[in-house]
Length: 277
Image (cartoon, rainbow, N blue to C red; front, side):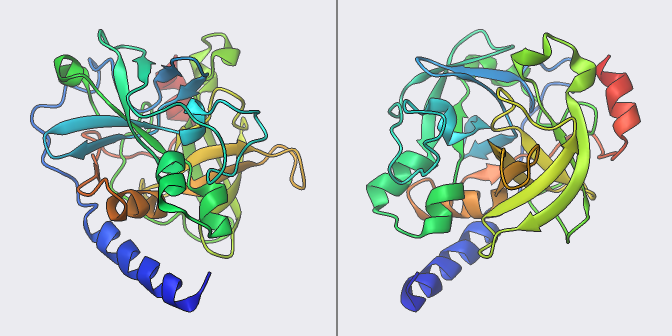
């Protein structure tokens, strides 16, 4: 990346992060009654099943996040969002727990392609989409992460070896919800900070794509993008949420903010597993 481009992006990143203060939520559904929340399954029309990460707001609209590649139409190995094929904005997305279908409103892949993005890390790891929740279903939404509570805001994963937490909901688990909560460790981060490699028990599997990751303090720091075979088999690549949201805010989707949870964060994997039962 040229230094001038890097400076421009750094400015956009600072503006974007400043905009990520939680929007005032009017009457979220109680966490124990909400049917739409982080960790539900999403199914993009004509594509695949994924796991939602977090709830977001933009003006008066409410969104749920998934991976941009959940709307991809190419091979599973097509991970460069700057040239991978995707379904268009407006595509319908089925949300478990909703009565109406959601609508694909933002895709980092489509945005990067329209923007002519060339930075390699950005192309490889900027992997988030926002699905607009139908107004009739917003009363069913709560932004808290099942089992853990939070998120407390957007933040950093911490240093190497830091604890991380996630909730996957792949249909490959055959409905065994006790396998959904996961705890692990941060192994490394990419040079530009766009991606974080993590190990969790159990590891993320196909269908967990897009699921959110929390730091030891409950901050939302990432979204599951890849399941690695090499060089670290069984590890997962997690896109950096602060950079993903800053990019969205700087490139046509300004005003996007994470909705913080109504339940306090508790980094207790045993409690999360028991609660999932």
